[in-house]
Length: 248
Image (cartoon, rainbow, N blue to C red; front, side, top):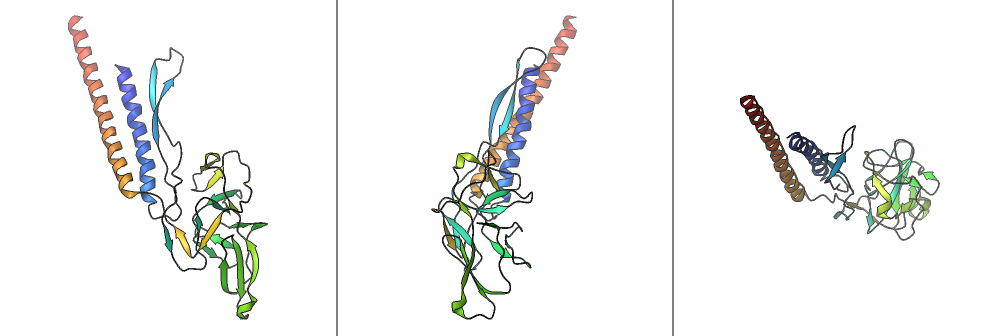
């Protein structure tokens, strides 16, 4: 009877993990450039000192939904979106290179081009720094950044750098706990000239709120079923104890 209890217990535990994945997707339905996570459960053999007679459930996050989210035009000079496949490079908190599609950019007090979360945007020669003060900033389809110094005539627009655009194989990258994507092998991705930017636009989250709610309801029902199985296992075990007591 402990087989039934063990399977039900591990199933309920992993259902909770699966619910947390779906809840995180739902919480990021309004996050710019967010890519939804998938989850799945599979049976795993439990190995120990005795014979491998136990099997438990394990929830994995096998991949992500890489579909592009809907585009929204913002008419803001520092907003960018990727047209089709591709990513732009940023410097993560630990200093490593990572990739994102959350293109709501800003310029800090020191002229550094950053994401909305404060991560430096990487160019051909590292983090991009712009001369201040500026009257205008233009970002081209190839990531080229042109600026107009404050007080300068309109024809004084000049290039100061180019955003690093990459297009790695989707099977080669994974999402970190910080929401950024990196290559699984740790290699720095090379620039991809075929990646195209759309200026004054943002890519919204690709999370389908209705689908995520449906998945959460289904997982909650599975959790309740696992709890009922644990109760049934307890009742059967009690009946067995009573029968042994009578026979003894």
